[in-house]
Image (cartoon, rainbow, N blue to C red):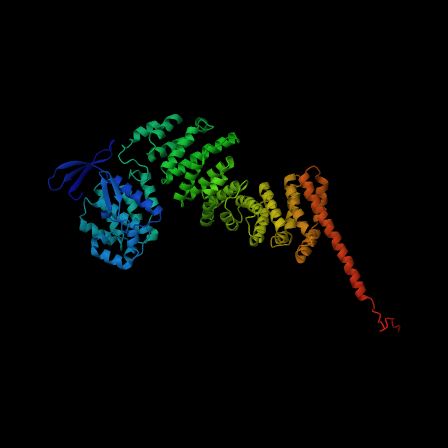
Amino acid sequence: MEKYQILYQLSPGALGVNLVVEELATEAKLVIKQWMQEILGQMLDALEYLHQLSIIHRNLKPSNISLVSKNHCKLQDLSSNAMMTHRAKWNVRAEEDPFQKSWMAPEALDFTFSQMSDVWSLGCIMLDMASCSFLNATEAMYLRKSLRQNSGSLKAILKTMEEKHIPDVETFSSLLPLMLQINPLDRITIKAVVRMTFVSGSFKSSCVAMTLHQQVVPEIITNILLEGNVTSILEAMENFPSRPEVQLKAMKRLLQIPEDQLGLPWPKGLVEVVVTAMKLHERILDLQLCACSLLLRILSHVLVQDAEAQVPWDISIICSLLSIMRSHSDSEQLITQGYSLLTIISSQVQVSEELQKAGLFELILEHLYRFSKDRDICFSALGLLWSLLVDAVIVNKDPVVKIPALVIQVLDTHPTDAEIAEAGCAVFWLLSLLGCMSEWQFEKVVELLLQSIRLSQERVLLVNNAYRGLASLAKVSELAAFRVVMPQDGGSGLTLLQETYQLYKDDPEVVENLCMLLAHLSSYSEDPLALPESSEEILPELESSGIRALVREIQGRFTSSLELVSYAEKASLSLEAALHSSQERKLCGAAVREEAAAPKVPFLPEGRPHLP
């Protein structure tokens, strides 16, 4: 472009934006199709793909971008990723041509490379493409070098670009200051660059699945197509599947349509078209967020209308959703929406085994670890875990046994959140039933279950799941039972149990769970294999807390619930047996003490007593 001067820009047409330029040598005026946006879009696409694979190019510069056709470029010299791990070789290569060195980030000159180094280099390339009509090669090189020490010179260039009406100057003015930050930690990521350019509509070829030689759909046409009813909108989406801008506009329009006009319960074609768009444009975050919002709206409405409705999903769609969540691993909103969708799906169809094989447990573990402070992600992840574990056949226990530690961390991080406590109690109960909890975790889990009950006793689901969890742990661990009955900082678990009974004495389900816990606690009082010190502590606590009277009251009030009666009777018999055994021990102890206190009569060697 150094040979030409841009005179003005023609109005956009069906073939794109055209420039009227004047050749400096001959003053001849020419019309040149503007393809810079397409080339930049392809470069963004290629670099984002490399970074997604954790590959750093390390030597991004114009000579490593080659045109393979009139409208198609490719990124080359990927060997730099391997060669630039040897500092001596890099020094030799870099000093061969100082001009080539000017594209490198400030930290790269000190042999420190990261994805942000590639972002700097790409920013330099974009700056060069935008300013090549008024800067020669030498001026551009000195500009790039100056940016490493002072970003002030960039403002002057951006102002000149604006004065010369360089196409897309608004986009460049927004992006370049973010890409050319001296501190790599302050730079924008390549994924964020792609998102900004897509939203602005500047670089038409960015992101996958864009057909390079396809004509641009004029905005006026898409607006007409999308202003119709649901049928016409779906036709537009089906006719332009490779155009993410059309798909995004269509889904936004569908989100605005009232539910009574969507044709719900859903037209199957609506779900299929939305899912197809998600698959084709996996790396466009805005489109994925909009698609998930639309699917959640559809599915939630349908299930409210008909709880027995079947969700039209298969394992390929589910795997695509997992892939999308992995592609946008930093988007907290997408992760939350994805978990909400998977919870609905897993509650409707038996896909737990397939989801386990697809690595869903590992993905949940990663997110709970990374986003333990994010309330929405934690809540949606716990809800999904409940849905997966409730009727699950565990394919591989290795990831599942890691779940309790992270759930403990989440509940410790959100100690006053009742919804998270409720979801966490449910997960703890299922994990204890599945035997996926280590003994060293029992005490902490008991503490958290009791804490959750104290936090929100009015939530009946929380109360039921918490007491089920306590009963499950008390059944398999005497230490867990001991921690339930012994007074702690927050008070005794037995006192809390009696408070719960007073609140829910007319709710058979809650009372049954209380009796189940009492039955397991009292069993240690009569267990001959129990540790003496623990058993001796559990029985007095049960007695002194008035549990015997509580059990008698329950037996008198509930006579028709077989499970409840069975647990209450078991607890009562255990307590009676323990009391009887305790009384016998006391009598034996008294007899021994009396015998020890009686005067001893001396005996003669012949065996006859010696009378004084």
